[in-house]
Amino acid sequence: MDKPQRLICASEALADGGDGVRFEIEHDGELAPAFAVRFGGKVYAYLNRCAHVALELDWTQGRFFDSYGLYLICATHGATYLPENGRCIAGPCKGARLTAIPVTEISGKVFLE
Figure 1: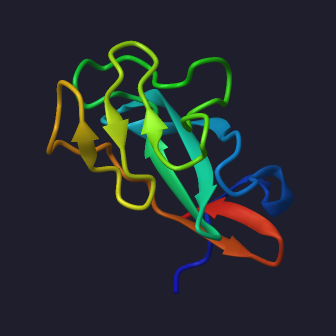
Figure 2 (figure 1 turned 135 degrees about the vertical axis):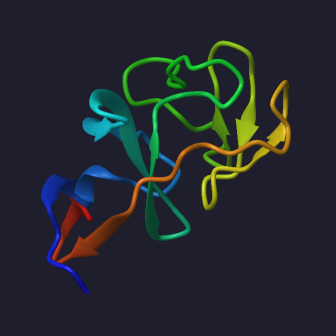
């Protein structure tokens, strides 16, 4: 395994189905918004861009999950994504996916790979 590149947050900052942590990443030669969330005990990260229209997903800063903590929801058009793979299962971009960002969790910290 390659050495992790950059610290995103402490593991304890991500509660299962709870608020996410926003960060920026270089993507296609420019800085882009991204986020990390925990679901089913595992950390997932994606570009913070809806697959329907390239707008940020969160309802308010760091709020990506629905009220049950089961799905990621776009605040603008209601696209609904599976947190474990970013696939849109309902809404205007059904079948599309969020852009995944590789992360790893080591010794109580979440790193960008």
